[in-house]
Image (cartoon, helix red, strand yellow):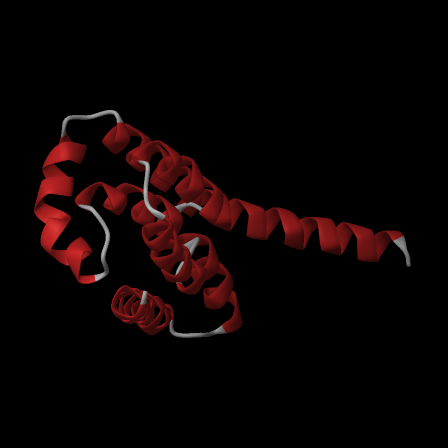
Length: 138
């Protein structure tokens, strides 16, 4: 292993880190602002019908959005104060396992040549279908 390999690996690693940071940092700030604004109760109220399809309260939209756009750890942190039931936590977990960290994973998928829009739509659709299924069986 020579210096050229280390330099090439470092250069590639920094390039990928920069591409991911360009997506993750703005999303993080937007969600943080949303979290502390009066818009969140309004959004929750309007998402109640959609969230009821998967057996979750309207407030569960925030952890779902955090999980979809940031990471599962942010979603867990947002779920804790909501006092969700075991059923709701299970549904949320299944949904997030199928669709989490979408901007970061989209950036990685883009590097491999996968059609990003189709990938994101399939993951979100499967996430909601699984949520509906688990809502029915639990």
